[in-house]
Figure 1: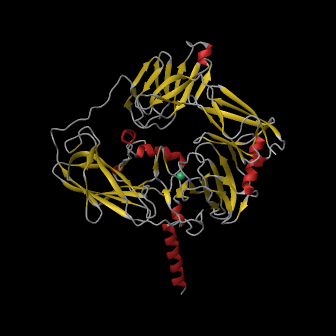
Figure 2: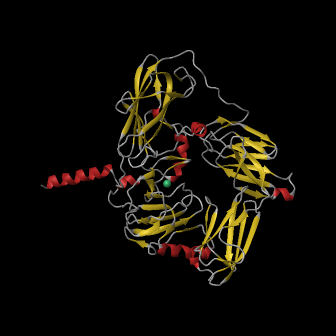
Figure 3: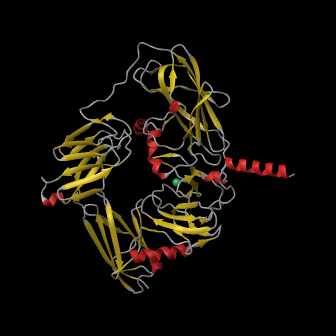
Length: 563
Ligand SMILES: [Zn+2]
């Protein structure tokens, strides 16, 4: 009996080792059925998605519950990114994150408002002590919203371990209905070396997918030689929503042996930008489709690879027959297989790709400087993953710095010497990135000035120029005007905008006292809640100063009545 018992214990320990995460500790943070608009590890712009995006029935204001007992350990409000966000630390060491919230529960809201009024700032970040905001599982902590960089009402929910690494919340038992296998959009073959080729070409080849009756895929037979790799474009759909989400795992086998695996279960924020090394960045930037490469190039620090054999690369010899299989899985282990039959065939007559070359060569592991009269570009060591010829041209104040088809790992700087501008003009200059088909749109690149040098730090290659902003921000009152009675309004609403360098800051007062105006960059709206009761007077003087990124400012003043 003793023996049997220890065997049972041993077995259950073994089972737990399969999934080390507690499966019934956390509850659904909403009380609606879990339907996702985003899965964990999903490929996004410059990052992997770090949580679940839970649909909130196309509206805001759904109650958000503490997923388990714990205390609020961090509150952050920012114009962009997560907007209004709460972090709960739980006794088991995990932290849950709730983002894009509309507002907090009354207790937390009061805690935050006090701080905002002390600091005279809408944007804040605070780390409350463990005895301040204590919660029981299921307590209402907030209401769902669409704040920050959210493109529609939803709740962004994360679970992080004690090293701040996000983990797929579905590993904790949050159940999402999914019975459909991932969808394979495209498969590509990549000749790697100068002498390797696929279907008589040294360039990346799109393979024609053939769907089989059982839902799996194959491609037309492939002729190849030398060192090659593959890439796949795939996504997944859950049962209750029609939107495309990310897949959970991809494996590749060569003649029955495991060659490659990537598993999107956990990562760290340090590595999230290296998504640009996983995908074919140039293809993404030109075609807006993300091919995931099933081979690992040098300088790829992603931790999610497993079971790599020769980094996922294949070597195809002449006159051989081999089989390459790709298996794409969703979290529920629904899978789609792609079978690729490869005929080893050395061809004499192969198309070579035209490689770009210029007078400027970048060594990824060295510091590189590019200088032309008034412009200086400084790339620290390891700014890039690969060595490459860079397209570097200067015409007046317009700098062509390649284009955004080469992924950038770390920040580099661009400096302009503006001594040849008069003091009046030079005060209004900023560095902008030019985008659009005709480079007709400018994007403000955070610009710092020291004497006559303007510098920006960026992670994006492309076209840059000096742009002048002589136009002050606009201020448009929505529900207030001189001498108006506005007793019936809960909020004071003002729209602000700055088309050139953009808004840097704003400050609003009533009768000289600072008021909290919440800012939403998407609607360009500033809102003050009269329930904050900054003024109890009948006659009120409202004043708002808005400043843009080069220091132009606009002041708006009006008098209103309220009882
Ligand atoms: Zn999200």
